[in-house]
Amino acid sequence: MIDKNKIYKTRDGREVRIYATDGGDDFPVHGAIKDRDEAVWRNYSWHSNGFGVYSNLNLIEVRPRHKRTVWLNVYGRPDDVTAYNDRWKADQSVSPRTACIKVELDFEEGEGL
View 1 (cartoon, helix red, strand yellow):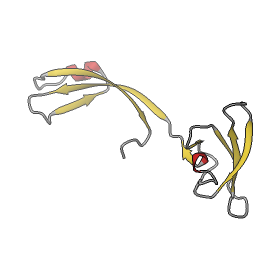
View 2: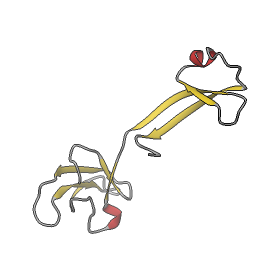
View 3: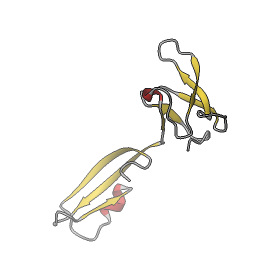
């Protein structure tokens, strides 16, 4: 089900505004799609599952992106790695480490779940 409080884009990447999700007939989701060439908004309707008449205009939820820096302490065994939010926390480790690696993460919320 499409939620008008969430952010969506079309399958081909266009910006979308959702106005209502309780319209009648087979296309109860009403909104607009931003035209790429003219930079104007065009009205459009979707099924309650976000599918439109054209598959490239199907709705895809836009999830927030997160950026984070972590420090990985790598120890002697291949499966022995611990992540820390701060370098100074990684440095407080009591076990002798093989390496301390800075990793920049950039991911979409829910990615990999």
